[in-house]
Image 1 (cartoon, rainbow, N blue to C red):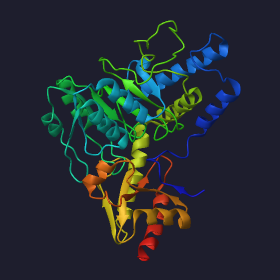
Image 2: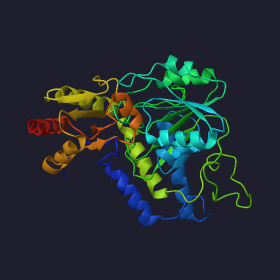
Image 3: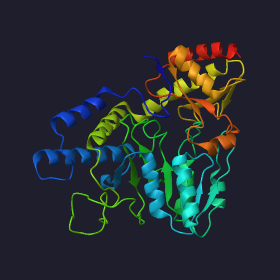
Image 4: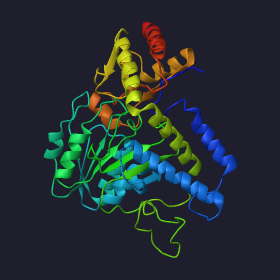
Length: 382
């Protein structure tokens, strides 16, 4: 089966109940949600609502109706950004954003004439909240930050940045792609107005699922318009949640699978998951430093990152390392720019990228031992 160390891309394996719930729905229910008054359709509708409640519970939010389901975190981010930012507005973002944010805002810069300020950070990805405040302008309409870098794992001071956003009454959008399910998040305590998440990473759900939790009371224009299963005679998108931002037939099977992933997380406890992963991360950071010619990027402190570690071996390209790990040792990692060129700009690795390992809840120290042994062999060839 090999050793899977690419959980930053998507988590594997999933809890068995995720696949079971998906199969059970497809085989025994099969109806879409919100589109019928017969028993199976109502059952599907209830299951979607239970999934909303599970998301709200996980993130400490009080209103399940403001959990909007999407196909992934990229759609969630585009929904929030495109729905809030107007022509000529100014937005603030980190220096470590994924292309899910960066390409979206650069497109608006080109097409809507917005201006973008990126907050400086250290090579290890640390950001000072006061640097965010210094960039605020009268026309700043949105502050966007990833919770943790998908390249070096650095956790950002979300709660402090959120407090600044609230002070200036500017909505604060957090990309929790890497942290949701693996790190404690409380929307209200962390001062988050909009939380974008994906289902297939640390939430342990299937691909094609994600969402946006909307704690902000301002207006968000819908990204799409269409059928919602209700108010069909009304010619425009409804103005109430979640229908104002959801349209078309939902991925019912996927959302039900996501609910099972979240139920597993709630049963295990997010803090338990975080502590387990942190232990393996600390072990990995220590063991990787035993390898001759290795450069490890980002913080070397497991309390400052989530389960993402990027590195390079001297005189061997990231692609060669990843290929060798897979082909000879059955170890699966990621190489390249990881869809985050701005982070590599900060690190000085934009030319060749890095090798990235993504540690998940099912990884053990023995996986790290196997990785280090393989890397030592690969390194000796150079």
